[in-house]
Image (cartoon, rainbow, N blue to C red):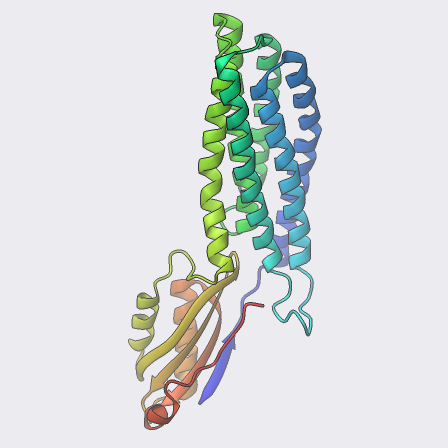
Length: 308
C-alpha cells in the first residue's frame, strides 16, 4: 500500500490582490455611507436609508472579508493543521446571513410605509442615490477580479451587487417622486430592494453551508471522478472516495485505488493526481493504493482526513 499527497496553494500575488481590492472597496463604501445616512434623514427617504443600511452592512462585510483573508495566510499549527482557511468561509456565511436579516427588516418597514406614504424630498433623494450608484459601480469593478476564484470575495461582491440594485431602485423612486409626485414609490422601491437582496444572498448562504457540511464541491461528480480513475491503465477499482472543500478554490479528496499486481505503483499515483488536478480542480489528494492480491484483506480499510 502507499500514500501520495498533492498540494496547490494560492499565489502571493493573488492574496495581495484580494487584500488591495477589499481595502479600497471598504474605504469607498464607508466614506459614502455617511453621506447616504445624512441624505436619507434629510429627504425622509426609506429607500435611501435602506441603501445606507446596506452600505453599512457592505462596510462590515468588506472589513470582515479583509480580516478573513489576512487570517487565512497564517501558517498551520499543531492544533490547526489546515491553517485558518475556513475563516474565509465563515466570513462569507456571516455576510450572507447579514444580507438575509437586512432584507427582512427593509421589507417590514416598507410594508408599513405603503399604507401611509410619507412626504419625501425626491430631488435630494435622486442626487444622493446617484452618488451611491457611482460608488457601487466603482466597487463592482474593484472586486470583480477575485470573485470567480474566491468565495469570500464573491460574498463581498454580492453585497455590492445588491447595493447597486438598491441605488438603482432609489434613483427610480426619487425620479418618480420628483417628477410625478408618486410618494408610494419610496416604500415600493424599498420592498423591491429587499426582495433582490434576499434572492442574491440565499445562493451564497447555501454554498457556504455546503462547504461547512463537507459536501461535494459544486461542479464535481463523484461518479465522474470514480470513472476517470478506474479508466487509468492498471487501475481495477476505486472506492472509499471522499471529496470536499476546505475553502473556495481548495478542494480535497481521499481515495483507495485497487491496482493490478504487476502495475506501476508510482506511475498510477502520478496519473491519478494529474487527472484529479486537471479535470476536477482537486489540488490536495491523499491516495491509498492496494494491489489486487491484497484487496480482499484490505477492503474496506480506509484512510481518513479532516478539514480541520
